Length: 350
Image (cartoon, rainbow, N blue to C red; front, side, top):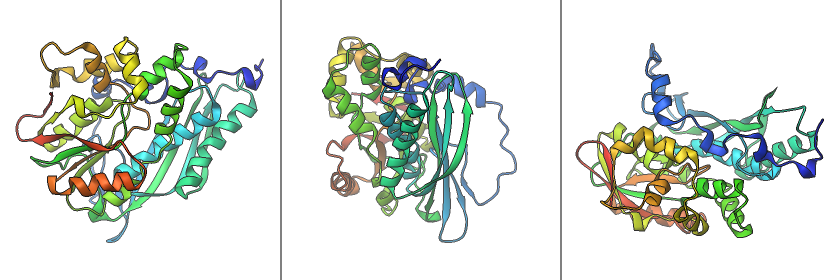
């Protein structure tokens, strides 16, 4: 029998929330290791070869379609907020390729025997509100009866074929700019334990529902060489994807990282997601931390971000212009956090 809508806590249905429920990087690599890549058409500009954010297929000399899909289990209890966060996260992959969304399809999986229809309606309404903000319709979708609530989007966009921003084109000397603060996974862990304050919840929702719209403007900048968004594998994991694809190393300055204030408090007290440890197990051997660095610093850079910020690799000369674009579009904490360097792929934290 369904519980009353006002008594439903969405996170009680899920074993992990948001992008923290993604398959761990080491396990995903093993799963995909024997996946054949055969007969790729020449117009498929971006496929699975570089673990990029979306597929890109050239339609003609002026247009390429950006296609991605993203869904997850609840990271918050409020149905409307869950829908907003999931939709924002899915559209981010289009922006991360330099694209502009054109429409979306909804992915809905709900435990119908336990979930009131009103709650499901509020989830879908939240997703629709974000798509309306992005200026696109939800044109259809698919729904199934599941054990855990799942919501997300198939997101489609357009980009000029010569302005696609991949995650494997960084160059030595490029500076790294991060658009949003870290700590979403830590706040979600605090929420699940009943420790998160009202202001901390507000911080989390504001960050995770902010569309990464600067990505479209960044596609116009030739000095922006690589672009991705920071999601379930954490800052370190997604930066390492840039390193591997570009055959470069990277260095980040820990004290320059933007962090949600309450997340910093909780991680220092030991609050973190299990996904942070799973992430580190998959790629920690590629990261060099300072001798004697406290464990909470490791947990922060491997913290799974849901609807996280854009990570940009650009020439030093373009740094000011890129940061100003973020600031103009309402990202006050965007800043330079490090740089790319020649040498073996790997990440050094100073």
